[in-house]
Length: 147
Image (cartoon, rainbow, N blue to C red; front, side):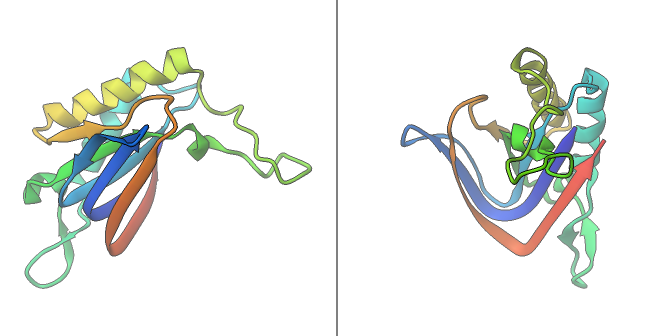
């Protein structure tokens, strides 16, 4: 699994003009699922993100996690995170490394449930839908994680 994690002051995802999910201070997490990923991969990634120390302490150092701050998460599935442009001759990326829907959708749900089991308030986009994502990046702080 690959995740693009952004520390946000707020974020929202809309489908057909309606808000599907939103969060306040916390993390916007885009998640892509690969062929080799499993429920265990989803749980490990959720644990890592819940404990990722990218929030500042009183001295301004990255020393606090989502769990420490009581922050929220907005999770958006994004197969394009698995894009490969190195093996392509032209400029169109390949998405063959992305898992098919029947594998990816339950693993995204397992990831969300694992975050919730950590005690984090989680909202989501809509799997497979065309979404509009709005965010106010805090920092900016953006990381790519891979499990």
